[in-house]
Image (tube, rainbow, N blue to C red; front, side):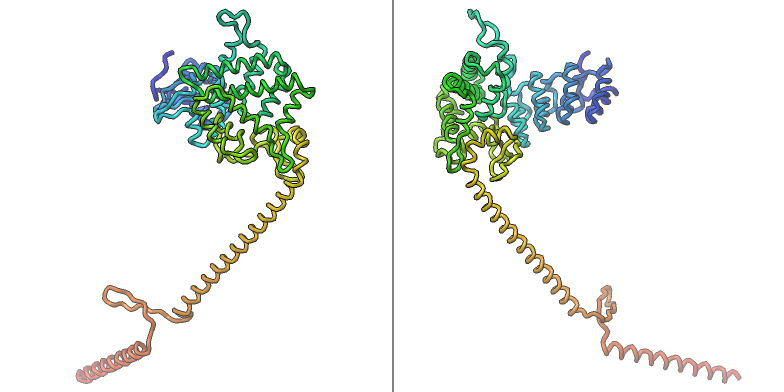
Length: 458
């Protein structure tokens, strides 16, 4: 069936769009089974059902449409928007990821020259920006699981592709988090496997820098993960505690404030070792990190994360102190200053945090006292302003009362076409009484005239 023109929808296709708006998956399924419904039909604005579902955040409907062959890269919209752009605008990370896995192109631009990531950033959907910037197609990794050219063996074992892809596409670049992802998969946590993985990462990094459409962001990310893998190999070979020892080294903080010095130096070393010195992104990272003393803000990790994921500094969010996971909500019960995502992270960090916990508690208590003082001062200020406002209102009311009086009568005196309000005076009252006398005199004279007329007739 040929795709219809813009706005040329039949009744069932209109019902499909209505079902999508309501999130009615059952009704959408029934309508998609009809021969009269085209899955890529266009409304008057050039939007497909998939675009509508992505923009409205309907996850199940998006899955259904993709199963029925919806075109994820349809670009018939009047302003050149794609389904991925609408997913980014909606702020739904799951749908954004779904569009990417379905083959959505990330470099397509709309009528104002913006990509999907730029559109999402423009409306403040930074989580979707992170998903788009960190996406790496599984097919590109599967390429290395097959022998290429004269190679007799693949560069990457097929069983390692899945676990490695999970590490590559993670949006949390904290070194502890990456080591935990390695540790949780026994296939990766072996020297031989990690050697193959970091070599493949280096190949991807090289390809990103040498291809026609250079991708410096992805190249830096591949190099960074490769450095972590190489350090993991050293700990697996030389340390009895293996990856646990690497995690402890990354978390170990200074006695004074708990700042992880080893972690900071390690990330700086990873950036310094990036093999392509001419890269613009590398130069930006060096300019941002070099002037900052170790132990001060911003940290090397925050600068690197912002460069790779697209996260911006003003985004308000809580991050786990141990693994850097976003949205952490638990705090140390003693100092209330350090944040964790769960008890496991708290236990991992306690060996170093306990040294600075009491000092942080004192800092927290001082901050609370200062906050309480400021709050009281603000309340006093508000009460004072309210009292002044009430006094001012009462004063103005008294002035009005004193000016016009409480019991004065007001009468209307017509002067020409104007009506004026005047208060009665003694002269006015005298004039009124004289007028009454004149009326009485005129009435008496009229009665006299009538009596004389009657006498003459007799």
